[in-house]
Image (cartoon, rainbow over all chains, first blue to last red; front, side, top):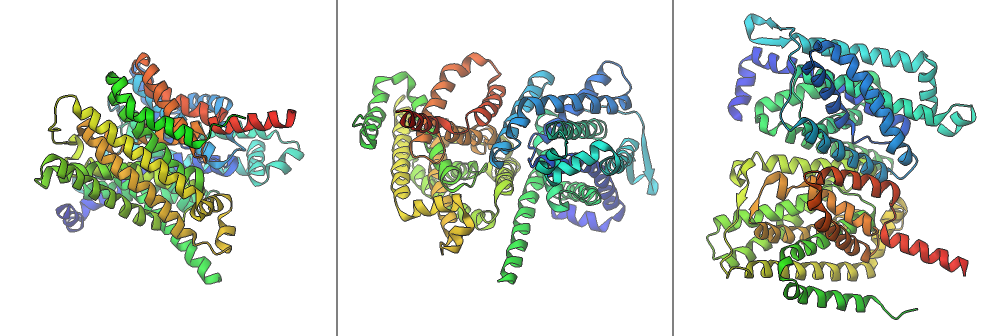
Length: 300
Length: 317
């Protein structure tokens, strides 16, 4: 562990490689986190099933490629398929818990996450899956820094998706309805907005974002049935750090998390990378609480 | 109304607990697990039901108990029962210490943040244990063999867990009747008001979590010895099974009631033993579905449902 830390600082190209690759992976986290922020802000639900939606999106692309389609086509198809899945999940479960106690929605989505995780395990097997996008890699600094083109593409797409979503929420009719519902559902209903439909569309949109993130994840990285909860926790962490209604913050926090996680995976060893993700989330919550407590004591 | 009260039910349960291993010799292991489930549900309900802090990470204390017992029994070089007793004691102490440390850090957090934070805690603990060589890393630890006769092993652990469950129940029953129990409910109902009335809420919360952790730590050591093997993710920090069952049993029975968790543990465990084997690999899918169905359609639990029915009959009469 100490050797790795020394190596990390003594040999800068290696550090650059680890951090750049992390930043690029972070774009995928940002995409999933953006969906979580949307659902959290509008439906007031912490969507614990978020990571499983990402994993399902990855499997859609994987199955498409298995049946002979070009990998990049998987991206829009995953998004569309997951949009429908999200709508179904909303109609089956989520609409029943929207106005209930916070704990009920957390536990219900947690149950859904176990359900989907285990179904994926039975249907697709527990093997680690990946798809080769056949785009090759970019080599920098004499070959010490290797960046797969698919990761760069994922990075660009995440930024574009963030921008499109921002424009959609600002200018489109439905986007405005979503924002109005987030601000005050009762007033939105009085003004003639069908809030139930807005909720359904928001949730489906979130699932589509997750589907796109999953599709990129299976091409740029790997996917297996049990990797869902880490994605949920990453999204949660990013939203907690960035705040619910802050697109630029979500993207920055997502990229930062990617870089931090990749560096930690390198220093502590890959077997502790997931532990690091979860421990980091606990640390962020504790730090956030301590800061709030200090603010309170100033007021007294 | 009938004259059945708490004492009758408790006496019947005590009789059942003592006699059942002799009457149903084929089911001793299942009975032992039943008592373990009762401990799980009761300890979860102390925070989740009574205090309104829904923890998904109580499994951490169980895991700490498992590992403390396993490591001490491996390294202390004591005969079996001395090693076990030392392991249980150290496990309980470590679990309580962990509850104090984690509690001081996490119990100030509320709502979603506490629930997800404790979920993270449980999984992080499992991941760390499965990467840590000293405690066997991903391949887990085997516990020493029970030295007694063949068959007496199951009896020993069944009665130990029964005693633990009984002690846990009586402790809860006693605590809920004191000012401490009322303070827990006050924190659940409105923490800011409880604060304003001068309750030392942080201390009360940490104490409640420590009580939970104490029983979970001991149950961890006993369960690890009963199973004979601990795996970091599937036994000790089994968030996807034990960790979820705790919550589910307490809700199924009716959270925030004394008998609810016990009832929930009985119903859940018996159902599981009867039907689970027919599901052939679909058990965990069924578990997910069960959580969704119970939480969405039956959040008040059996005790809550009974209370509602009684109320409705009262207004109709």
